[in-house]
Image (cartoon, rainbow, N blue to C red; front, side, top):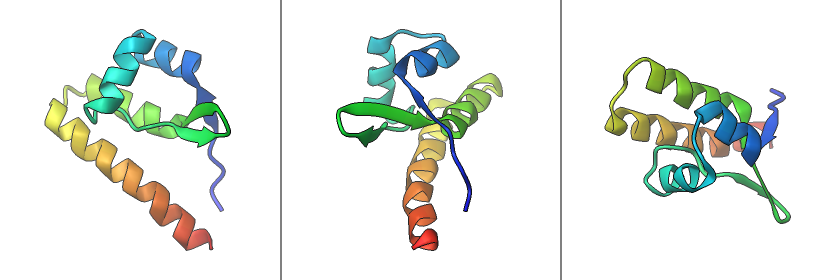
Length: 84
């Protein structure tokens, strides 16, 4: 089993160097993975945020980042079914 660290919104906005509004706009447009909800809390797997940041640093296009985000979200479900 792979242990993944979950981070909260202030860490996400800090890592992405953007504000809350832009962070949620990026989620809506598919440029950032949606949060994992835990009760009323929203958290993100730290490794997913790091991968999106790496793609941005590498100069990937928005379409390439959207494909990465779709892959990451699909992998969440795959990771769960493999564990069950």
